Length: 332
Image 1 (spheres, one colour):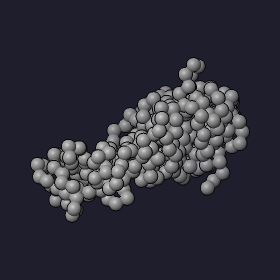
Image 2 (cartoon, one colour):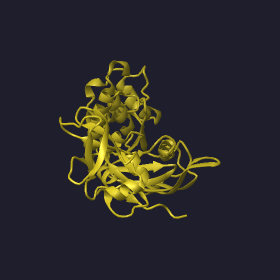
Image 3 (cartoon, one colour):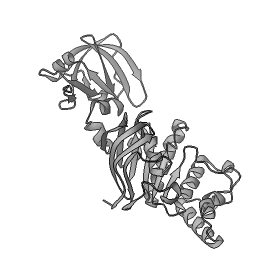
């Protein structure tokens, strides 16, 4: 793994009189794609703004490549930012947008020319430099925004939900584009999103925040298959929350805690399963969702294929062995 680039140590962030995120600890390796994922109000954007220097840290330390940047102003932190709407100047060409920060820093014309053309080549937009944002596609604008963030030499780029205003098809294409650019150019990405598909498809590491605290850190597969808390079960993917009485029957033993089963781990038509009534069948293209009732409890399953049970019919239901996630009730 690459050397550590960004370190957040015992970081408290928020506003005077209101701490939004408590005691955050995170080590980010160089060249990795890290997503801060969580619902609205979880504190992910507040963390990003604090890393950028737009909000002062209430406590703790931020280090970039071993240097303490906790109290430095934004312009001295050497981190680039890609905003939600790209924030390109509409009256400037791509060349002028990319070179703007260099002009502000009073770099020579020769240096601006050299550096802008270097990053434009890296980002694959050398043929777009004379165009204004209105004459570029969304993907080209995204590349300009990334090139602008990289032009001053930043190795860490912060992305503040840049995909949230896009429709599903364009969003999927832009995910691929950003991830490809990050891999090819080798920068470290801190990407804020509330969309789990963004995080699962793009990230090397996902940091899940909830009510200002880290619920779990891991790659997408770990979060999905080895959730550490009930919140992760409910927030990442779709799970059935089983009542203790039903969990005891389905899983065996006396289960008093909280139990969760992914839809794809609910098996239908197996011998010796519990009888279940099919309430609803929803065809979703690649798979179908089957909503059932078992002993008065709602359970859903995911099926792939064309042979689907009829609503009103009775099927046998079981859980894939070892697939349930069981959490003991917290002790007071």
